[in-house]
Image 1: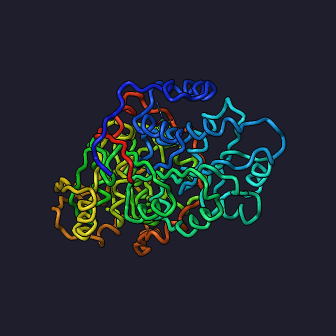
Image 2 (image 1 turned 120 degrees about the horizontal axis):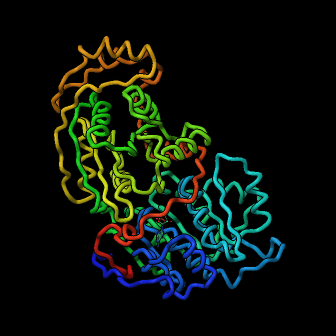
Length: 482
Ligand code: AMP
């Protein structure tokens, strides 16, 4: 793979030879110009070749595979009521329910003027409505691996006629322990098929997966593998572990951040932080696998409407979310898996817009920082942050009284290497189980368990076109990997 490329400058959707029904849907979506990944991938996919695409969510990658899939399946579209006339011909696998739902909403809107049927299946919800839909027949199926295998076992999904396969966010699927499920699914598919693999990062495992299951793929990049977006300003703030919550509040206030995703490494950590932020006057909520589907849906909708300032998330819960124009992300913890850093900061500076990725780094996270710098192949700007005790805005009487009582003694300035003062910190908080539970790391093996009831999303809001055209501001190239 090479790192240089020429970006097509005057591409239009008309040049691909897409059917009028597809072009109409594209126009209705408000898209006028293909994004760089679309300009590169659509002709290759239309030509029937396998693709290994390096692109993150936010680059327009969903349309880059969905549009040519719809075009290629159009000759087989029909209005027959017979399920036999609507076998699954294209299968799109995604790691999370949120992403599956998002991709399905896109496919549905791009195919709405055609007779092609699409459906989405993911776990955590009743199988019966999914089974009924599958029995009626669908040409394009979007699925998470586990639930798809459940349907295969129940004979509600037959994959024997799949001619196009998409592995979306393949690196995520491997991180989440889906490799055995993927292998089982791949073994059920016809060997004569077109396979498209999209991944934000190209780890050795991804390359192995590609070399096993793809045939002479064309490599398409809109950002260098394992690179971070150039339009994202990355700052690492060195703070004592015990000052991290105060640091988040301070960054949100000082930078007047109205919408920020704060990443934590564990579900418990995310819940705890959201509660602490609320107590410090930041409108916050946690989104992670232990929350019910309706809670996650409400949290996401409120965040998208701008009613929540800080969405505190674990990696799995935040994966694939398309939240337009997110100005900043904060890493409360540095991720254990360096590749998660690339994914996390990809939530901001989406599709060419600029963004800030702010990371809190405590002295015990040196290894994580070194791993990240190694992966992105450059040192990060590390600054010291002096954290003031937050001014609290409690809504309840008890909280207000506690504030008045405590403020004088709490107010302090900490240096970067000051030891966390857990004792005094706990005295400030009401007694709550969460604060006494041990820290729970989230190893990738546990990640799959976390794939919890999804928050089905509304179709993603549109990005400003100029922003999308900027992609990641990286040199672009289309090369063959062979
Ligand atoms: P994706 O990377 O597929 O999640 O897409 C990110 C966002 O960009 C989604 O909200 C899409 O609806 C939007 N989008 C995709 N392609 C285009 C385009 N050519 N012009 C404008 N918006 C687009």
